[in-house]
Amino acid sequence: MEHIHCLIVGSGPAGYTAAIYAARAGLKPVLYQGEEPGGQLMLTTEVENFPGYPQGVQGPQMMADLEAQAKRFGTDIRTGFITKVDFSGDKKMVVVGDNEHQIEADTVIVSTGASAKWLGLPSEKRLREAGGGVSSCAVCDGFFHRKKRVVIVGAGDSACEEAAYLANICEKVYMIVRRDEMRASKIMQARVKNKENIEILYNTETKEIIGKELVEAVEVINIENKTTTLLENISGFFVAIGHTPNTQIFKNFLEMDEQGYLITEKGSSRTNLEGIFACGDVQDKTYRQAITAAGSGCIAALDAERYLAALEH
Image (cartoon, rainbow, N blue to C red; front, side):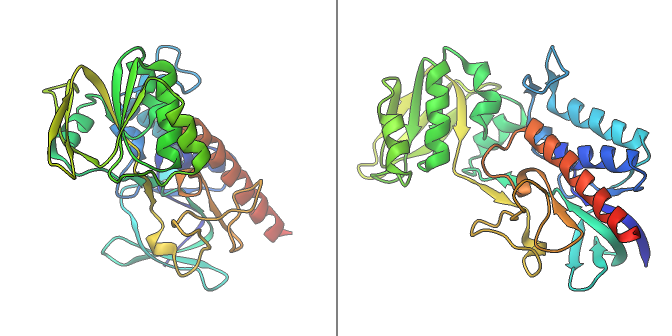
């Protein structure tokens, strides 16, 4: 069985930043990149709001830069993912992949992120992977569609918040709501309804996203009367139907909310178990930005360093 001081589970801005700080502190971190190395930013074409990139940067390039920086300070970055954990004892036990390689860790930093929920349309997947205007983050990508027409799918508080954000910078926002009412709070519904350039289409589903390389139009269908409508001159298609935190393997050990997000002690990255810390989107369902994930990764590494230092004394 392999023994390490600091195990980081998952990559992305949170995991890589935690690795940079942990490595510089001499913790000799081992980072497993997970099933989606680099996280959600690997699907993002242009990142313009991360400090230090005045001309912007491609999402995959930014992840490569963070990975290289973590390696520079001695992080052992490994391909693979954790399949089982046992946090019931003093030592944190994990199993890697299908080969049953076991690791005993003094500290574990969980940065497994959250995966956006999608509609499942082939055109959605194709245009998303091509960077053609399909996104799950209005704050991240809305800027590219300023003064243009966009569509957003969703009916909860997050969807309303993103629709209102888009309305401030876009010419027109179509909001697609599957039922005859929203499930968002009344105050959030009012915020959307008071925006003159937001048109809410109730009882409506997306039938197809039109466009070869970029989003050009969106075909929607009314669930009640089965009529279809083509929304033309659309440049962006935003999906705001929620995220799924990647926390399944931790369910028997770590406290999480009803949605599965890990609960951390206020003002820290500490979970309910000593020596286990969480950072990034796996514990943040509010901001979900690369810069906030990176900041929480720094906090997790510092918390792990202090925890280990206290054990030695």
